[in-house]
Length: 80
Image (cartoon, rainbow, N blue to C red):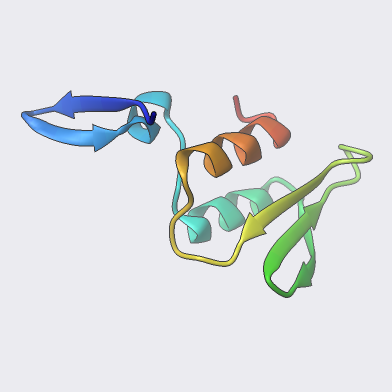
């Protein structure tokens, strides 16, 4: 069950509470700023970084990610 919070009387998803970004364009921009290189664009974007050997971050091609996908990417990139 997703984390749900109430902010100013409106229901919001848990990403805001956890500080997770779910917008794919913003996630990709941050990955690229931090030195991740996009090696493939097919069904998903695939990023690698020389500072993280053996780690590949896979970002689905869509506008918004689920909480779980956003958290997995944040953990792999060591944002959380």
